[in-house]
Length: 120
Image 1 (spheres, rainbow, N blue to C red):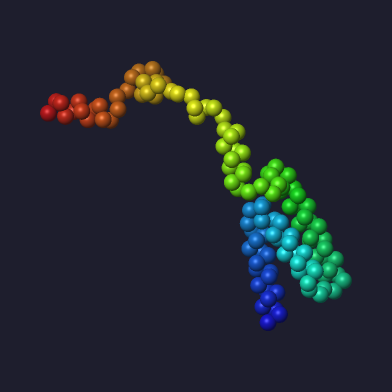
Image 2 (image 1 turned 135 degrees about the vertical axis):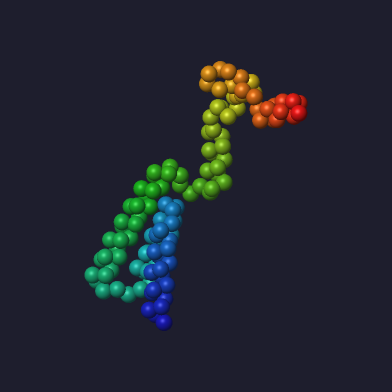
């Protein structure tokens, strides 16, 4: 039974390690939990302590890269929404959109269909 629990923890740790950078903290917590609750030989303990230090360093690096610490996804969305550029608010006239790069006016499919119907 103890082997099954160990294997389950290992697969859980691998699954969590494969997730996004925000999951890095969970991986570190799992390593720290195993270090605190399980008995290891001195060599194994030194190896896991080294893994925990590496994990914490990677976690700090990922948090600094994203520039966000302890903010929810809703707060991050609100921050990006306010920082959007004003290019989406500029109004482009339809006549400009109907022209191609040669500045010739093009007709829509609807207008072409109406002209075909008129000739029948």
